[in-house]
Length: 268
Image 1 (cartoon, one colour):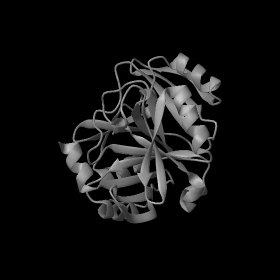
Image 2 (cartoon, rainbow, N blue to C red):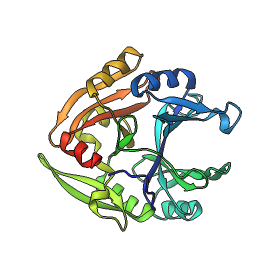
Image 3 (tube, rainbow, N blue to C red):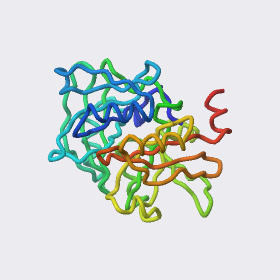
Image 4 (cartoon, one colour):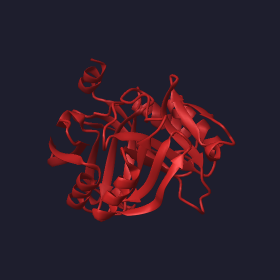
């Protein structure tokens, strides 16, 4: 599961690119109860979203002509330069070469061989999330890809992630966890996008899942605030209740109320 004990390959951060950061702040504040903190003159107006005072994500205003509204995921890398070389050697591409983000850290933006974008983060004063696996924070991520085998091999070679097959109704589900950990450290899944008509409409992509106390209420609030419910709240056996949503500008994400057994494990 996700933790804030970051090691190479850990999922370490998530942020939003949006054409209207003020409206986005209101939307996510309404759905998750987030507060937005930021300096309008520092880091291009980047904001940090907090839940109960702890950082859980970030956001920045980005003109739609530069990039479509979307959530991005960051993976921990002790050396960004080495990470981008590994990405290229494994068949990925580098969309943004390594840059410093003040004293917070160093980052690069990449694309895997199946077309899914992601970033790598070398921590400075900001290692990553202050909270995960609780309502209002990230709890899972899924890679919807055109080639599960190629994607799994890429993230293994480029980021040191290990793949683990979990039994699932009708087959199995490929999960990812950092090298050197055990499968209990899984934080994301790799899914063939053609099995989901909703995801098949888009190129390969990562989808973040945020935990909520009430999946139905979160979906209703998203709709009320001008967002969309792409997939109505649905129960998944031994997983929990999930819904797939989009904010008013089309940035997609999912929400999850974990199954009681999982929630009990996290609390213990």
